[in-house]
Amino acid sequence: MADLDPLIRYRKHGVDEKQRVLARLYGISEQLEAEKQALIDQMDKEKELAKQSESVDTAAFLGNYLTNARKKIDSIDKKRRKLEAEIAVAQEDMRNAFAEMKKVEITQRKRNERERAEEQAKEDRDLDEIALEGYRRKLEED
Image (cartoon, rainbow, N blue to C red; front, side, top):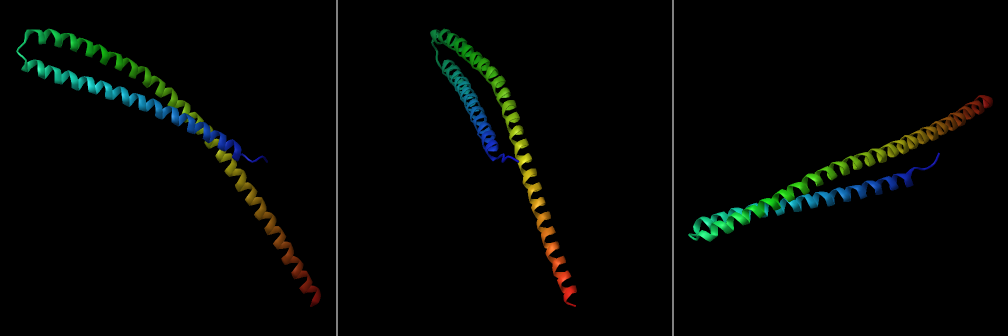
């Protein structure tokens, strides 16, 4: 039977590649979340500064700033939703690749176990034959 180790290495490489893609997607997701949180924090800071300011212009500028910041947050949320769909696809792809790799590994392990069992059975037969031959010789000597 063919040795499946090269196929196992190939499948493992595929799983590793899919894990790298997934890690990159998670990194992008975390980056987007950090951007969103930074915007929210900045909005809160600007609101606090506007409360402390007595200028009428500050309220108008704050309104424009908050509107633009909310648009950016909405844009980030859209990107994250799209990214979450990509992550789900990548996770499923990785699960499938891992399952395929495991199938090959299990097949190889079963083959190895079967070969060991066959070798052990042959060795047992050989030892039994040696023992029988020794017994026959002993009987012939007596």
